[in-house]
Amino acid sequence: MFYQPGKTDHGLPHDPFKACVVPRPIGWISTTSPTGTPNLAPYSQFTNLTFDPPYVLFSSNQTVSGDRKDTVVNAESTGSFVWNLATYDLREAMNITAQQFPYGVNEFEKAGLTAEPSTVLPVQVPMVKESPVRFECVYHSTMRLPGNPPMGTVDVVVGRVVGVHIDERVLTDGILDRGVPR
Image (cartoon, rainbow, N blue to C red; front, side, top):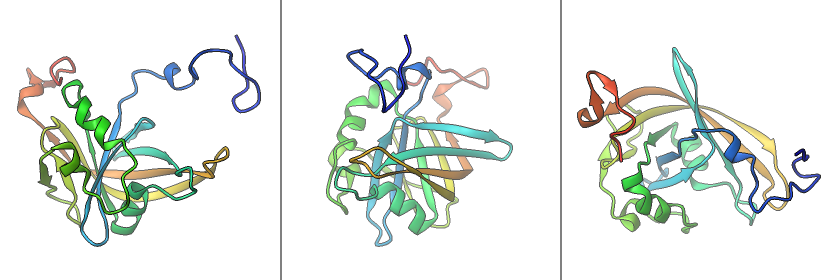
């Protein structure tokens, strides 16, 4: 099989591109607006870039109305964001936060999640207390890529990890046991 993304049809019921890169963790990103409102949204395009020093990235398409996502605007405005591990047990709450709420809506409250304060970021960003692994990140940069209509551009956001929280219950013999976080 061969297809050219955006040019030729792949002929499958679902676009296989995202399924080809696995495992692919969800970037469940929390931010704070410049006025202090918490924000939480999942991003399927997330990965670590380097480990020394640790950097991560997530990418975000614009909304269909051409607006940039709240998460990107908040990270750029405040210089901070948190990646929260989205586990199987948190899937329903994560799906709630995937909804397109109006700017200023607190997704933590909508999803029934506990907001725990970050510890080392220059701006207070809530973390998902129920998540067993969380990275506190200082915003580094945004690369804007051309997108396909109607989305406009794609924002690729890079952050440096300055704090790592790991729940002791997901450690086995001092190693993160990927089978434990459910």
